[in-house]
Image (cartoon, rainbow, N blue to C red):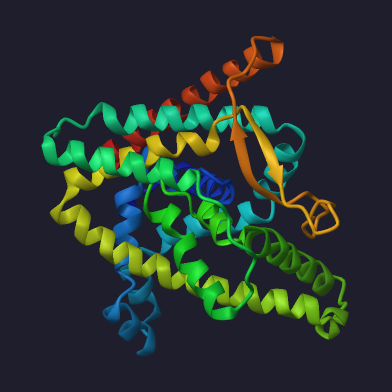
Length: 339
């Protein structure tokens, strides 16, 4: 597998990791869709499946090279490198853009979701009553989830570990947004904003050789929360990959139809024209996260008026569709080369 992967493929793999990381951060968007459209979804799932008992035996016995090759280490390493870079760069840019240009950002993502639906469904021909039922169920679940009310924030470490397991669902199951599930669980700001910013600030302090943060109980609590969340994410990633690998092998058509349904259902989450509902405190003031942004709890969707802003948003929707279709063409070429 790796011997046929060129330098440009490796660079694009890091960029795809950037895309997955950014998608996982945005509520309503699934990193798994990026993997699916880019042509490496099945390799991603089957590589994660290799993290099993045999892999740990190789690792414990000191056979690091064999372990690395067995789990398709270069592929996973480049992909996760892109994701890590994303969380400290692209995702921060996205935070800014969503705060200041919310309509236009959601328009691009809405277009990308539409493009993903077309791309994934265009070659799917195994339509029968079972796959149609799976499609309908997936769509209903996706829509239903988008209208649930969020819970309150909870930093209990066992619950944080559970959130980690659930959050990676978007990486392994296209159309199922892990970040939106975190909003419903009440821990989106805690886990994907506050704790990530705490880690970023900690790295900045260490570079300056400043270790005062070790005496800051709030910072240390956030770092502990992030560590438990990461452990839960790794656990969920490996677990989901084994389950999905089995399902894809034995029920591929039904799984594909369900994935299409999930993605269709997620359109309600990323509908560009919506009024944002912010969390308020008992005194009527808005609740703020660690960066000073208002905490979002839900949205009220509406039909837009025809004006220049709407026209530009429609253009961005078309741009989003075009981006996914281009990514799909590249993914097809990549698959052809490796096959």
